[in-house]
Amino acid sequence: MALTLHGTVADNTAVFSRPTDKPFIHNGDMAIAQRTTSTSSVTGIQYGADRFTTQMDTFGTWTVSQASDAPAGTGLVKSFKLDCTTADTSLGAGHFGLVRTSFEGFQTQPFQKGSSDAYTLTVAFWVKSAKTGNYVLELFDTDNSRQISKIYTISSANTWEKKILNFAADTSASDPFTYDNAESFVMNWWLGAGSTYSGGTLNTSAWADNTNANRAAGVLNLADSTDNDWYLTGVQLEFGTFDENSLPKFQFESYGDNLKRCQRYCQKYTQPPLVGIANANNTYARAKMLLQTPMRAAPTATHSGTLNYFVSNSIQPTTTAFSATYLDENVAEFDATTNVTSMTAKDPITCTQNGSGFLLLTADLMAG
Image (cartoon, rainbow, N blue to C red; front, side, top):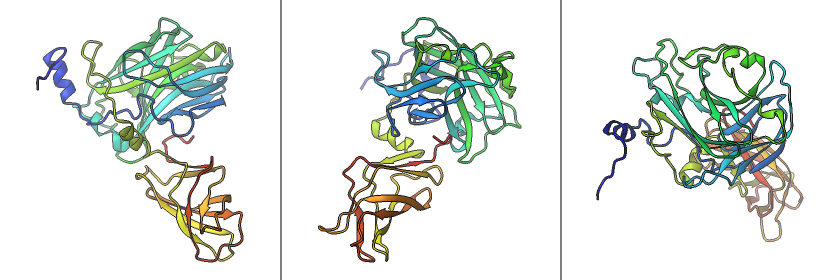
């Protein structure tokens, strides 16, 4: 089988020696959206696709969604979309809006941050908006409160454009990432900011201790009109410095592999595999389940609607209340109050959900 190379030998060597076998970015093609595919009246935190969320403070009102809109000829089919529904034409000093994705310390080893061998970084992504002008992408080190930012410009309204941004390495020996499951590294796409975050000089040339005023200087205000929207997809982070001729192609994953990586942070069950027994008062059931993949930390559980259970052919209760009794990275246990009183203590009970209810477990780095 012939092997075809594109670009220079150095370019191809860089592709073949990627320090990670999987894409560093989780869900960079926005294909996974477990929580919901559209949410209106958003003014704060809302995930539009797994691992990508808004973060806002008095920045208008938005609909956040997973859109079936992507640049043609790329293999991408989904995008993260923001649509302004209530404008804010004059941002207060501390007000801002951004889209972010973040990473735990366990994922940051490839950076070699804090050493003389630290990598330069290249971030590439596709973006589209009705509003042209200057936007800011910031890389932020949560462990050491350090950051670096770059401006990118949307030149043509309502047109997909590919952006490639190069960032310096952080070789500061006193500022390595912390190797744990807490947040260490964040990517912030700034969409507008008041003077607290934009009143200084954008820090573009080297990583530096954080000065808020230098994080988003020069950014426009996407919230200034209800005509405005913003789309993002095809996000990739490469270790090294690349341009449009040498950038490795977007590294697609299978849907199943992509979903499994996202499930470390969020798991949605429309038929949770809960198995347990009825309690002595005949209306309660305690049931537990093993999680599909270990989560980053003990999750937060959210129950919506009713879950249906099977005890026998004549006893098939539904939940009227649902509460967690134990949660860790691998196991979830719940007490369910049901709508029947005919169960016998120690009756086996199994969830056989066939309605519209669901169970959502979240352990993401930003709650939402």
